[in-house]
Amino acid sequence: MKPKIIYIAGDGRSGSTLLDSILSNIEGSVSVGECHRFWVRFYEKETLCGCGEKIERCTLWSKIDEKLHQKFPDYDSEFIREKVKEIQYFKNFKKIPKLLQTKEWQDFAEIVIYFYNQIAKTSQRNIIIDSSKSIGWCYFLQNIGVFDLRIIHLERNLASVANSWKKKMLLPEYYDKDVFMPQKTNMVILKSWIKIKVLALALKKNNYFMFLKYESLCQRPEFWLAKIKEFVGEPFDITEFIMIPTHSIGGNPMRSGSNKKIVISNKKVDLHHLNFFEKIFFKSSNVIAKTIIK
Ligand SMILES: [Zn+2]
Image 1 (tube, rainbow, N blue to C red):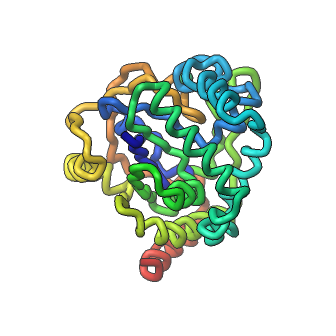
Image 2 (cartoon, helix red, strand yellow):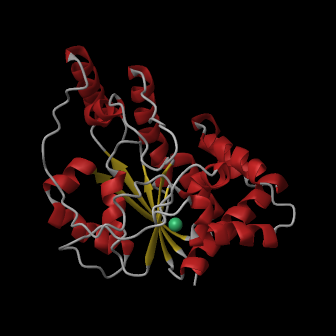
Image 3 (tube, rainbow, N blue to C red):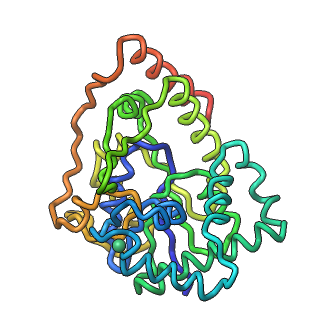
């Protein structure tokens, strides 16, 4: 049976951690976080996996590395890393279907297919919760067309996203040094948010596509959780969620596996990292974008 990939697509700082933690409660699933970062994180050996183990020693990822070497004798992780990077550039998005007609990219796709199949096989879970978020990577998987791919495009209000990008945040998965999430300028925040909104229109052509507003999920959790349940097509209890152990790449190893109850809070975001003009700028851009991009 081909693996089912439940893919969370969208901008950073859009609430994907919450959605990922909820989906991790689906029986028979494995949450792998931003697994497209495997080719960076595994080989740089500086971070913890969601299971709390150093990523290069994690039972899942070390096995997958071993399998990749066995299956592809010429396996070159740096070459793959470059390819993954290329796919994510917004400027390459439209070229993806064409690239996949070339031998070079077909060879690469073969490795990616094997990679996901091995996640399912090694973890013995056929449902992969992938919160890579990258819109390009998602489109690539969609074009490969061999998985049962269920895309949830998660979007958060632009002003809240911007407010979050302005916060100085430490990446919790680095254990030996302080690495902060990048802080973006106003124009970069606006441009990426809009590009993701526009490019996601192409993802709609997928057999299974769902648009989810983060704010709606927080305001009416029962309603949206029932929709999500129907969309993923898996039986799971939508009344209570806990922090399940994961093999998340780029997640917070302190939180996953803590078994703490997940609370969906409808607290209003006070945009205190934005100044007066930024608030007006992002709020009005959000309104304009919503009217134009449909
Ligand atoms: Zn792990």
